[in-house]
Length: 281
Image (cartoon, rainbow, N blue to C red; front, side, top):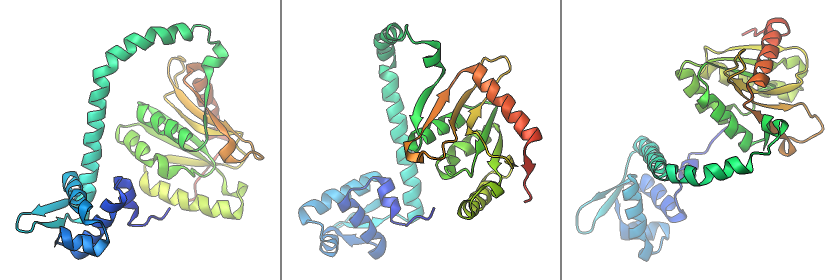
């Protein structure tokens, strides 16, 4: 997926005036607030507040003088500052959560237990999420919570960009990973080309990960982590093949049932050993 350089401004969460001011500063360099207002059309009554916000965020330097001048940070420094700002925001958020954790769990824990006392085993086995961002969010969590291994069955890994940071974190933590792709012969010409592109990206980003191909259609696709033959661990997300149902209308099942995840693991191991072929890369 290609990105435009201006996509960064949206990622930074800048307002329209802040975005306009920063883009202009990066183009013209050091300037005064009145000159910037004139160049951009930002109202003079707003320009100082806009520049103060950019300076507070660490994207702009304020040069003392009469009048003050404003200079943008270098693009790489802006990127690094944005990451640090997000990290600090997260730490502040986590600290605020920790302050209310005890009160929240004490108040709502007993209520939840009481309200959930009549949940049936079937209802407890699965819950469902929409396919798309909700399922990708669950998949990222699955990678980040994994401690031993993650196995994947996928057509082409179309959601790779969304979960790559989580995969990288898991791999850095020593989590093993295996992937079964649907064989290109099972794909249309367009999907075959797309799979080849994604495979190249995947292999470049994660060179130590093993992957194979299934020459036969896959009845389900999904991701599962940390199976145990003692049935006491494991988590999975999966969806079955539904050719006539658009992806946007489908749901994925999520389970933390150790027995079920162990069953998925046995299926995966047999598929890997007896019904897949190696890459020709």
